[in-house]
Image (cartoon, rainbow, N blue to C red; front, side, top):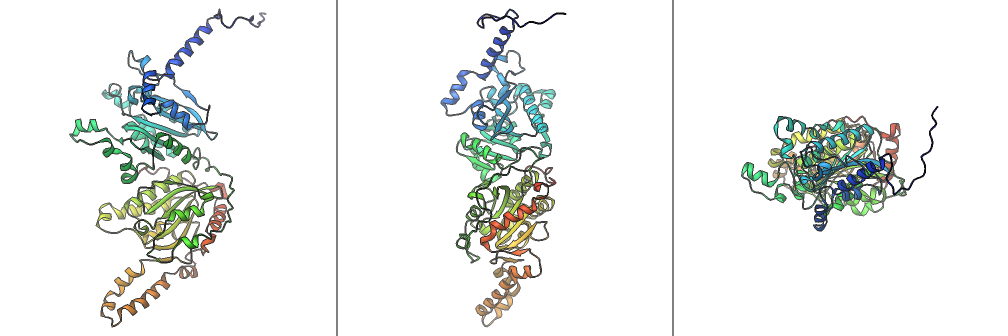
Length: 531
């Protein structure tokens, strides 16, 4: 029988007689060349221009030393381009954020301007499928010019290029978070539009096609900023959830948003140890919310007092500004807050606010995030402009989203909740775990002044004392709008002291989330990612 023996000691500087060292050396040489992506000169120019490259962006995103790159030695399939196209315009791999494994996909502008070739597509799709299979959130650091013409030409090329679009979201099996860090046309835009969170850096453009292609194809001349700059998407379209001053800030926002999300749909969001007493009284609220119905105040101040340590992460802050949507924590537990903003249109929501609420409801229901509603709205915006934007449809789709949602939901009427908005803000009969009101709340079909003008307008016009009679009617109408009538007939669950709002919400969340950690049935996971 042959007996194996340990190989004799040898000088590590001498080549191995078995040839393995030469192959290892070749591997490291290839890795060194691949690490330069499109070339050292291109990397240097980016840094001179104040721009990060794909590797630098990933290093900012993930925990130090945690990234394992995949496909670093891949390259374009175009003949003769191997040494000039390492990675084929994309860097992918697995890292961690605060110790949680994540999949990362970073565009590389130094190779073919980060346009998408067949190897590029293959890598992106493989990473996505792996992340879904193993339950990892996916991060996309995007920029680029979309489909690479030579690779995408012909019926075979265009067929292969549909692969990333065919992700089909896997029923929101894992969160997808995207940053637009440079001009993005085609592919990076498609990926952003199927993401759960999108941050756009200022100075970038996100659009279907770039200004140059538009001018050639349609004759339209427009700047990148006018076409798809951050203001367009943060304020007008709502297709960017937040904007960032720099790409570094955008990447930090990705990390911050992820801190509120589970790694996959099979788990609840992470619970954070809470040093903020869940029973803390909110004495300051008495001086923040005015009792006069026509006086505005900033609902963000109310939210800051209620949530743990005053910290929250607002989504779409510049879009549909009469409604606030944000992620926060109560007693260490992640919640999604939907709140009226009286500082904008008195809190009356229009078409954009409806879209914003639907999008946020779908996000929270898909990832087991309980919802908290804070009402102070005179109703929905009305008028020809709202009707032209399909206001009735948007109101009812929001209503349907509420009906389908299965996460715990708590509803607090702070000052007023009028008309159909009362239902859409999770009023009674909408499936909330609890609907409560402050003693200052006003609940009615319409506001007192409007209601009196409609019902008693002719009577007041003919009255000998219209001022006195109006005052009497207003007093009676105000009594009818009082939350005590609804509480007396058990149409709401309770009237609470405003200073006990935080303690009430924390206690009710503990009860509502006791079964299965509050995880819902994810009925909205198949809804569209945009509205």
